Image 1 (tube, rainbow, N blue to C red):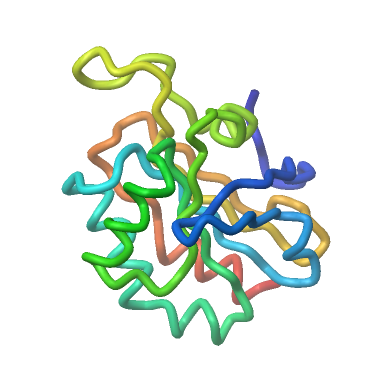
Image 2 (tube, one colour):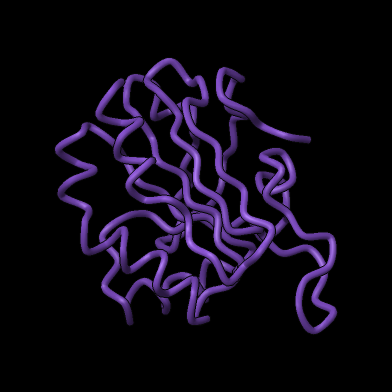
Length: 155
């Protein structure tokens, strides 16, 4: 499945690092930036989320909620969030439901690991429509943060 600009964002309900459920549909009326990332505690993933953490005020000023999603457990994400002082929700797609729906899913990843989120960034507008979709095949690359902010600015 491929999610493109103009498509309806698939809803999801996932547990965050505080073991509370977060649903995309509950964020209707807000712009949402969704970052999928392969694995907590890895170099590029940490860089991706730290970039979001360090610039969160820009996203808040643009009226956006930020979510990070990986297939890590809520317990792993809690430790990752605590260590890196992330100031936005990290959601566990442990059962591999949201990542495939968004086309952000490796059937097979490095080291033969199966079922891992691809690095990806999506902007979902207040009505639940995808306004930006970037799915990276190369897990060593980062999303285009400037493009994400540009899209938010124009919403």
